[in-house]
Length: 124
Image 1 (cartoon, rainbow, N blue to C red):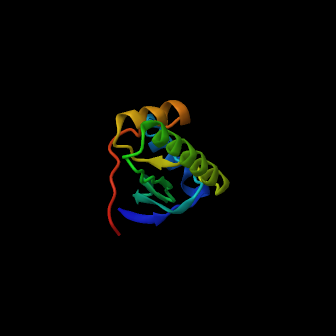
Image 2 (cartoon, helix red, strand yellow; image 1 turned 120 degrees about the vertical axis):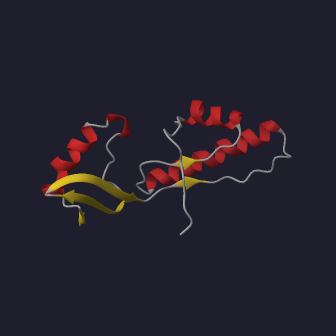
């Protein structure tokens, strides 16, 4: 078993076989890729990994403001964040919400979706 730099013309078919067997994972685009690699065993692709740039929107909000003002601040800041992320060529913007009410606004007004599985991070 060895790790090998991914070469599209050489490894795409092997990676495609893995993704087709696990359709719930989806196929990641190759946009905003920092690096990607495969693991081969006896010439067969058995794993694919990719590191992509990840955009996270963070909003620190004064919770003592009236609800209407907080909602307006969220809408204004998210509108700007989405505009900047799109202009930067990013594919997605992630937001962690700890408030069910804001989560619903993000989903209903801005089209945010829940991330399948558990989102984890590690300090580097």
